[in-house]
Amino acid sequence: MTDLLFSVVIPTYNRRELLAAALDSIWSQTFAGFEVIVVDDGSNDGTLEYLSSLGERLQFLTGCNRGPGAARNLGCERARGQYIAFLDSDDLWFPWTLETYAALVSELDSPAFIAGKPYRFESAETLRALCREPLRSREFTDYLESGDDWRWWGASSFVIRADAFFLGGGFSMEDMNGEDADLALKLGDAGRFVQLVSPFTFGYREHSASVMRDLQKTLAGVHHMIESEIRGIYPGGTDRAVERWQILTRHVRPVSLDCLKEGRCREAWELYRSTLKWHFRLGRWKYVFGFPVRAGIRRGRSRGRLRQEAAR
Image 1 (cartoon, rainbow, N blue to C red):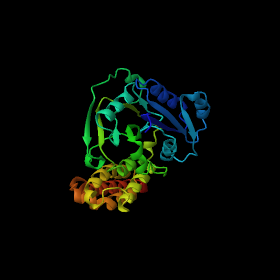
Image 2 (image 1 turned 90 degrees about the horizontal axis):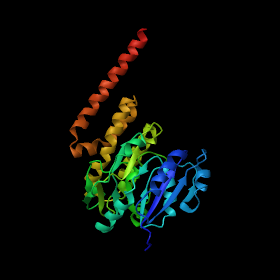
Image 3 (image 1 turned 180 degrees about the vertical axis):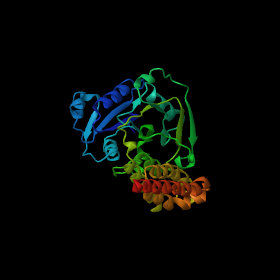
Image 4 (image 1 turned 90 degrees about the vertical axis):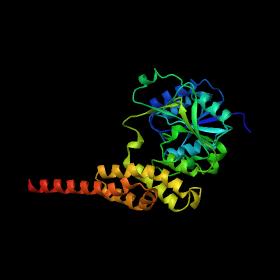
């Protein structure tokens, strides 16, 4: 087994300045046992020139603008660490981040999947007042056991034992949002799952260019997860179907409601119908009965606007 504990994998696309800040946060780590692998997914903003200037501080690879999942997989193929820690190029680490993850690995006997704790921010100035809090975590037999509470926040949360990552098949190669949720479900029974309660381990940057604002890609990701469940891609079989549905429907509900708000009623109803059996089995009555009411109100308002426009 390699003595290298962490391989840090960062996908990037046209984020030269944000990437530089992300890398600076990695160079500031108080823990030394790691390597850095950056995958440039076809940038045209000088990112490659910047990466070339860094010499042997990191490895960098080039992709073909296939999306973050494919870029992360490419980086993981070069990873030599026992664990793969992911960081998106618009996010940041704190100096204690890898030291915290290393402590969890040591104290909890090498769990398969660790989820870090985010601190949401818009300006980096707000991060300066943060202090390192005592280490606290929640442990589960595996990810499926963790239920439908929100346990992580994007791929920057993920620290995954390398053997578990590859056995799970890695990230989806589709260019979609939700590739992180899909991977978490594929790791559903991989081994012990740990949710970090404190301290914060990464800064989740909220900005207008975030890909999570792309509803079409989010829809693609949700449909991918629904199809994967129907096709039996996720582990656990029928014995653990309810646990998977708890997690899956946690992703479906907000997206279906966002579709209603955006007037994409057909897509909203498609999500509702395709998961109605799961929601019914889980007793999610507020959604089961509330969604049609909301859809009806939305339809009534749309018709009212059309009548007003026709009368002008």
